Image (cartoon, rainbow, N blue to C red; front, side, top):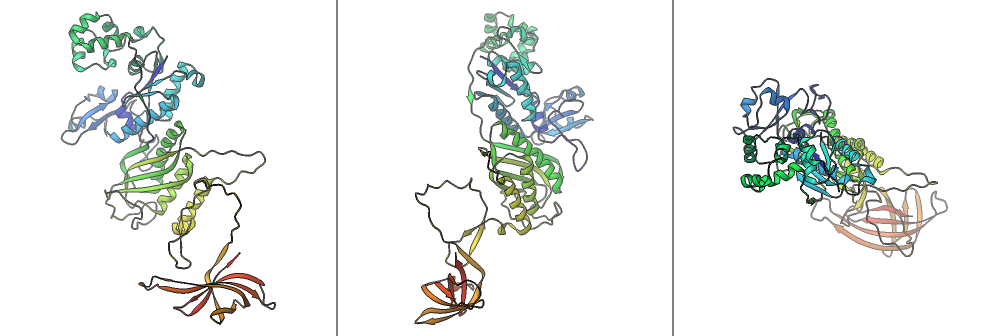
Length: 539
């Protein structure tokens, strides 16, 4: 059996660094943080806590060489010239850890959530799919960079703990053959074993600082002085521990967050940042063989929601979208006709939504979440032309809604009222989104009704209380059959009350008139206005 470990060194720093794109800031031109910006020549320190208890909780090697120490107060850290101060983000740490679980789940169904920065997975039976252990280790390291935007260390060993400790201490993808654990672990410091501070202090006084020196100690004497922890550390130093994974099932939470150090006022810089978040979300969805059925965008504003400003060149108006309890946060939801993971298409849809309903204040933070769903399955034919993609249709409908208004684009839906000619527009959905209906044993014949908007004025001659002859639009017809009247009324308590009698009339038109010779029409008599109207014709 073989086990692999994905370990993220400087996890707290990398979690913050992965939240920003690797390109110049569109506002200032300065380089933004990227997945590997915590390394190199930049001195970075991470602060956590509220003043006056704000302390340094993480720092890269450059900052430590400059004099930064863990636990140092914020005021002390700010005195070091050239050291960049970042704020810790638990939300981005949670998202980075979820991305790691997505990556591990794309390789193996047996995953252990060991620590926020470390994931273990069982490689049994994966060689026919992904190749040998070395190829799997390289694939995991590259996947961490592509899918999670994290610089990872990967180690493969015959037992989980050996893989975990090797990933903590050995750089690069590492494969430890069975039986060679002690030799590989020898030069590593004892700190990679995760010993307590008290045990490390005791071993340091003894002059034991490497795994090889620890493995050479008598286990009985070590047990007398350090207890069960000493025995466990001795076994880990020799790579002799055998255990099973504590399996966990990765959740279906796909969310990416971004805290900005500057205010975004225009739509183009905001779309630039959204594209990076969408790339991360789509990469995670692809790793899990899923797609997004909806996107939820939460924007943190720098000013109160009542403040007025222009964003994207569009003047501020009263917000039409729901908000959280915090008035400085705007929530927008984008429902998709079919599950998608096309970054460019999703970005265009978000841009159009923001153009139609801008936030109205500078943006300081972005949270983008996706509702997962199974991707759409298509089967083409050799001799059948492919129809238009629902993705393209959704983009076209969104553009039309932006031009003419959302209330004028979609599918008509009846309203629960008897008032004539009343309907509302609902969001258009494709056949794939509607539930499947039971198969009909026999085809049903349906009659269509074409409504005249506005209704046509008419004159009707009555005989014995029933229509006998009709005149409208220069046509003259004799009533062959009449069904009605259906008397309806409503809204009598408002100024828009209505009361009418409706008739379905089969009409034969005179030969001298132009137009149809025969037809079935619906007429209505408006008693409040004392006029006759032609509502429509049956096809």
